[in-house]
Length: 409
Image (cartoon, rainbow, N blue to C red; front, top):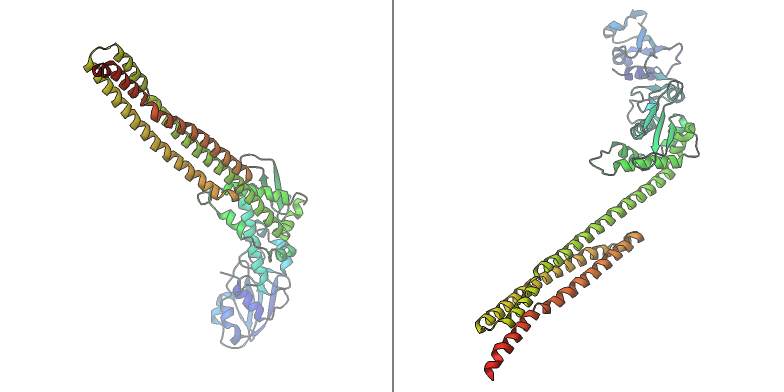
């Protein structure tokens, strides 16, 4: 049940004065019979007396009203509920405590303004009441604490300030609703705030940080305003607050992006360094064959058998060839590491102009260090390319001097 039938009959009576919580008047029955039948008690509203051409009818017998005649009726206006008739908007705002909590009456009528909440299209004041209510509900969701002590007429919202995980102070808003507040809220857009309050952590990984930034920005914005005036100041100067909030969020996200990108560069550097280290480790393990080959040459000098010396020489040649193939394989792997480094740091170079200067310097230093390491590894590999053949050359010379040359004399 709603107040609409009582609002309709009141309007049809040309908005008579309400005295002692009652209004009354005369109407032609054929113009209002359906309205009268719909006047069922709701929220204390009821038909106190109804008379058609001198004949009384009870509220239980409204369905038995004649089709025509002049009707006189008295209606009692209930006041036990927030859903009722208010003298004007000022009375509505001062008596509706639920409005300050973001839960206004859904069914009310403002007599002076002739404004019913169920009218369509809605009057401006109804739209503004809905807008301020949504704002308050969003602020309540974002607030750390709701102070609703009875000694205080208006609810108080407390926001914790500081960085995520720590606190440094509070920002306080006393929710005072007035006609000035409704006028101020009309021109403002709070969609971002309502969206922030309705977000979930699984859809925005930075939600808690954004809420923290909001509290910090609010504290900064109302720092010179008393809690009693802070709510009005927040709404009236909301364009300035929104600009400040966006700047602070951008600064936070930039800082987060900086650290994330820095960590990404560091991880890429570590991976490339690990790959270079792997190249060095593999070479170190394989190059133990060079000293072994040199030991075999020494043994050749002490061997008088042509057959044994020949086998040693062939073994050293095979060993050098195997080591050379290993070096070539490591060179190919090394070149792929260099290409990876060029690809990774080349991508950073393309976006360097949009990165903070500190991050750009960090990337340049990381790439420079990688190039130095690459140069050392490259120099070692290129030197090893010919070093692996040293034992083979020495073995061949020794075999030639010891066995081939004497036979040719």
